[in-house]
Image (spheres, rainbow, N blue to C red):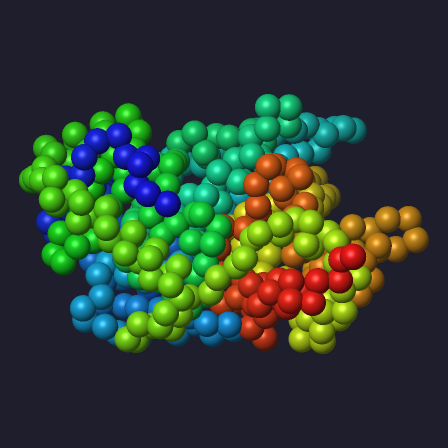
Length: 389
């Protein structure tokens, strides 16, 4: 994926001056969140200063494994994706959708308290920009648009990053979702030595960049500079496609998507589903960290007084036995059937529903699976023993 989403040439900004971006976002009324080291992981949290960013930290990820390590040469955004995605903020794991208080013999609906400030997110990767577009297709359909999601989405400001490092679990190149930031960002940054190349992707981004210029020095990139900036994610993409190990980095995953919809739908009784189930804990971690999973339930939560009740939306997972409860019980009683449902929906059924895969190659489901189940390997195993006539 190229950086063709930019609407203007990149400009150089010294790393310490990235504070001007944060300050301009705050001045525009945004709550700013970005990557921070917290409890042994790099997660999205509130950012007030450049010093809050995880410079000097790298993450090593593989199936069922996530570790941070110090590397003084690591930049502010040289880590890869952590357990948090934009979904955590636009479609929170738990939130009220309606609140009611007793009113005599009846009930009165109370207005929901809106979010105090629009959100700005630093460090969004190409895979998560693609995931955002998928979530938009789910929540912003004209006939059933989710008003809460729509409000948060309208105020969202995205500062994306062009990746220059990948983890062993990354396969965004297979899904055409990275490592360069694609369409959807307001600003994008590329980290090179002690500078950022920063460019706008929307009119909103260009306006903020103009505000940054009043606080810090921006220097236009020369054509040669621009070519070097563009080559940062492109060089990473070439390495990912080559599947060659590099010093200090394992070869990234790859997923063959050729005819994948028909491959999976044509192998619903493949014996490999049972082999996966022998390892799967049906814990639902993969659905929790996936940036595109959207299943949820709505539950009535009364308070102890009986005078107040809340309808609360909570994330749900197709790995739970009663997720698709029907008369007489659940239609997928085994772990094998529930894993098959998740994978075939993600990689095949999604294409029928939304015209695109539900996977962006971020690799979170591989990293955060307690037993290291790797969907790229499982698809390859089914492909290798394709049971279709």
